[in-house]
Image 1 (tube, rainbow, N blue to C red):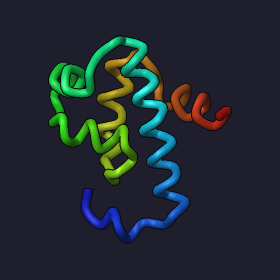
Image 2: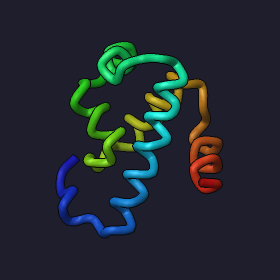
Image 3: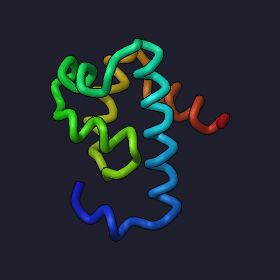
Image 4: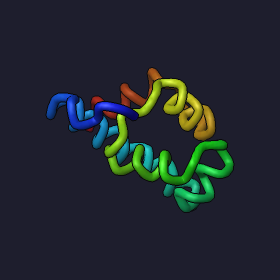
Length: 83
C-alpha cells in the first residue's frame, strides 16, 4: 500500500481496471463491499480502495478476493485484457 503516488500512470490505470472488474464480480453476487470484505477477512477500507484503484495492494490480497469469486488469476487477467 505504500508509495502509491510513486507508481506510473500506466500502473495506476491497471489498478483502476482491476478495480472495475472486482466491482463487477462483487455486484454479480449482490454484495456490498463491506459484506464482501468481511466474508473474505480484509478491511472494508482495503477492499473499497482496491475497487477504486486507489491502492497498490499485495498479490496475495487479490488472490484471496479471486478465490472468493471462484476465478483464477489467469482467467481474471484474460477477461480484463479483452476489455
